[in-house]
Length: 100
Picture 1 (cartoon, one colour):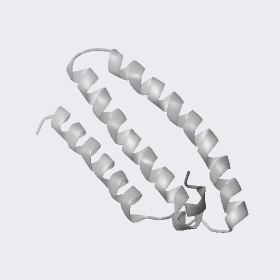
Picture 2 (picture 1 turned 180 degrees about the horizontal axis):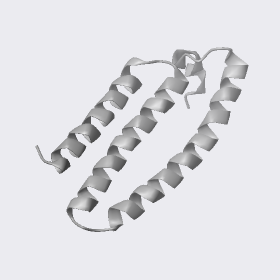
Picture 3 (picture 1 turned 60 degrees about the vertical axis):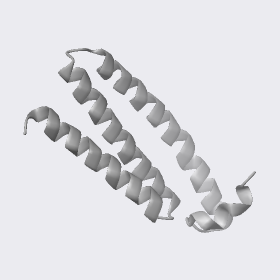
């Protein structure tokens, strides 16, 4: 196996572990961490394809995705903490009254 195949298989494994974590776990913070793991798998595949194509566009896109992910976490964590303070649980099924 060459380097590209190893990196892509690692990216698929990261994405799959994150997807299983989002589907199986009901803890809101663990689900956020698993979504970040999925995002890192996608970023790794973007960098791998950009390196294979000898282009810098993938690296720039990954930088943009990291900035958006940091902003998302900066907003999501305080919202989750406020919900936990109100409901006293991290279980996702306790927040069904928030559905629109």
